[in-house]
Length: 439
Image (cartoon, rainbow, N blue to C red; front, side):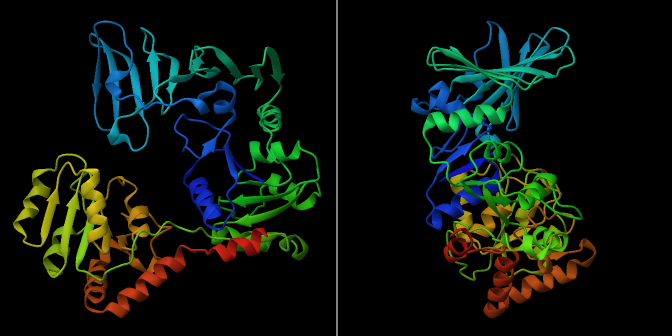
């Protein structure tokens, strides 16, 4: 049995973790390799290039090789490469961006057109390169061994994949053919495949013998139609496949669109999460932000004074935000460190998701995993999957937000009730749930 993922997204991570906790410790294969896959995830590109056997560490942004007299200028979000006053390159960081580790470098010609992207991995090597045509469309991506020998060539226009392997050249007309060859060459047990995409993983399964029993984990919305490839699975007996929907609204919508016989092959499963601690019912709240645009912040601080507010940013803070230091129940953390963030997640029991700009450090997900009660406004909520709808308030109704905060502070039973609703909304699953559905 193997896990076969198109991308190693948050949903893939959640499924991978849940399967491990439930006792399904399968080889996990990702079909899109950005060079920063976890150590327990492999890919066709790692296998054929040999990078699965290489040690190393990612490049820091100023370690990118550039010609003499070219300059690299970096911020916490990206870096740029200049030849005198002309931009010739753009450096993309791996997540989290503030660590400034290099994932890719775009190179521009004299006219400013994107011509080449060098892709770097978490071992510090340039493991692939993409070239572009005059329209700046990706045409070819080549993958290299650690000693810079080209081993895989992907033609984005024709979809062909060329593989140089064991002194032979193989030509595949599409990615799924290439993946089938890889799975067999790597020697995996293909009698059962767990996958979460109806693109290449689905097409790969369809190209395997029909003796398998697979599971599709569906992690996308379903509204008024059944996706075409899912309909094919429901109508086909090729490799009998169970469909497990992991978003509850999508699950209920799907049941309305299929027959009762087809519904017997469909189930719902949430995720399991690595909960780090229990809520300690302390009057400590955390806010992470990279701007001073925080909804109703000063009125919350002043009208709920029994709460202590810890406000952190990975950048400098504006004078407007620094002015909040006048309140004795506010602690400010400009240029907050990773260790400080970890400590505050242990110390706080509330997370106020009230900054209007982009979320930083996957804050609501981390708050959820630390069992902090999450409260938000409709115009600031960054993690609706982890925030109970009843805990997301209209900015026009800040009074109710503050009243809920006061009640949760003064009533442990009420706070426990809100935390239960938070977990229920997230549909937290158990190992038994997984074993019952997967078998």
